[in-house]
Amino acid sequence: MKDQEKHIFYRDVQDALDLMRGRWRGAIMASLCGDPKRFLELKADLSPVTSRVLIKELRFLEQNKLITVKRSISAENSVLYAHTEHGSSCGPIILQLRDWAVKHRVIMLESIRGK
Image (cartoon, rainbow, N blue to C red; front, side, top):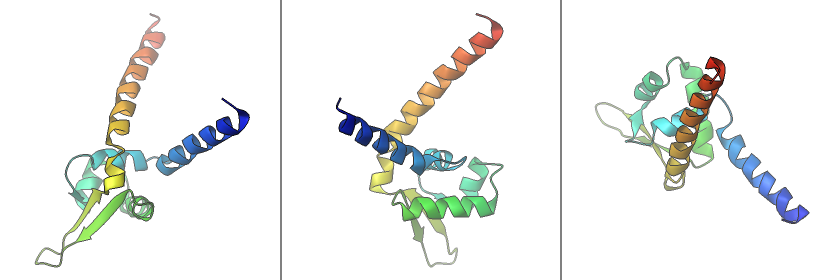
């Protein structure tokens, strides 16, 4: 790989990681891999996240076109959060990352136990 190609490759990886940087963004994206969720459902999934932080992260993900916010004007006045089509393309990546994390945890536990 040429130096320019390496630079672009590294920048692209960094851009992707920057989108998911922070304690809650990846977890929010993972939580939304199933059906759309209401705010309190997300908050329960991500306990102990605070409402303030969750709102901030949801706004960030919406601004970056990874999630949509669907408001329904009805008796419930419900707000649903869901992946955009683009955001749902992260699903396989999230699953691979989870699989990698499980393997990494096993390796680390084995090294602690002295295997």
